[in-house]
Amino acid sequence: MFDRQRRLVYRGQMDDSRPRSDVPVTGRDLRAALDAVLAGQSMPEPQCPSLGCNIKWKSGREPNYFSPPGTS
Image (tube, helix red, strand yellow):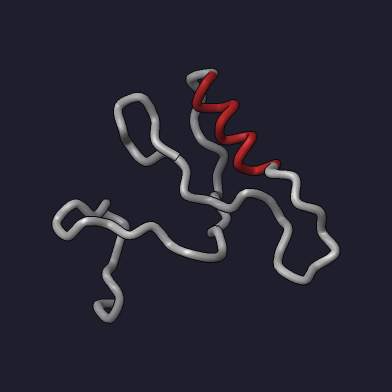
């Protein structure tokens, strides 16, 4: 999720649900991040990584924390 200045502020999971688990999909973590951004508060930490497709970055526009595949 990006803020008004188009800075990446949240890159975590939607919630604790996982494929083929009995944990319901609630969007709890993403909702908390959205609420924080709208209220001008800092993001919850730690941010648990999301599962599934990752964000594809245009070459040369990657954020500081990003390592292209095969470079780590």
